[in-house]
Image 1: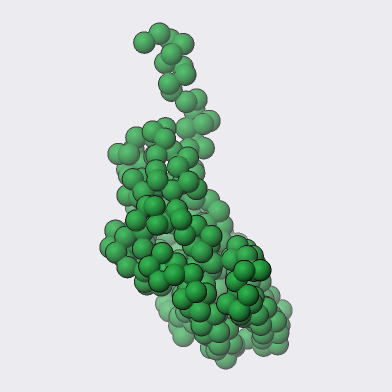
Image 2: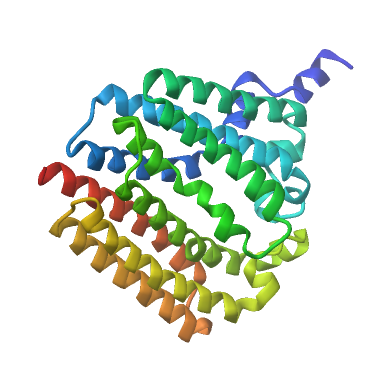
Length: 300
């Protein structure tokens, strides 16, 4: 191979770094971190040490990134079938599969040690539990076997507020578990709204997402049911977290909009785009957690 051909075959260092970063799914990590900091503020009843917040965000990001990288390694076969994932570097060959796996494991291991040293053992253990749950329960066991994959496996994404809480207090509480429950019940309607749009992709890849196995109508009904439960659970956090009117007003307003959009998707599917509910669900979660943080900080 000529020097010119080798230069073409081997991506430059910048491209390689970007490819590895893409394995961590940065957009998903950003959403997880939005739920971490408010939990820390509620636990502290004010702003915690800025170093503690930074350390928790770094450790949480690395742990989540490691889980996502291992997920990309395991799912590279079906990622090559689905249009939205065909450009991932483990599919295109820009990163060797073994290198991607080692990268993910290394991130997770380093994150555990980093969180243990800089925060608390409880926070480190919870972050590791989230990684293991996402990899082994969701990715390996559930995703390709049952339409309940995202219901059960989605719990992995509900760990960040518990990690944040444990980083401040070194223990768990009812409020932290309620934050976990909010994300747990938020995940199905959030993800199923996207799955309705990507039903063809999942069907072609043989992934039993709910719209594929039970149809779009049943999925819309389940989205509405989970949306109602989500709003109820979000209101229960108020007394558990000793929150007040700022949080309650936000939870009621944003929750009512969530249920209204889910109801419209259920009643008028022909004129309602599932992707609109998916996008709103992202805003909803961010607003809800920011509101709880502001409530705890302002009214502490």
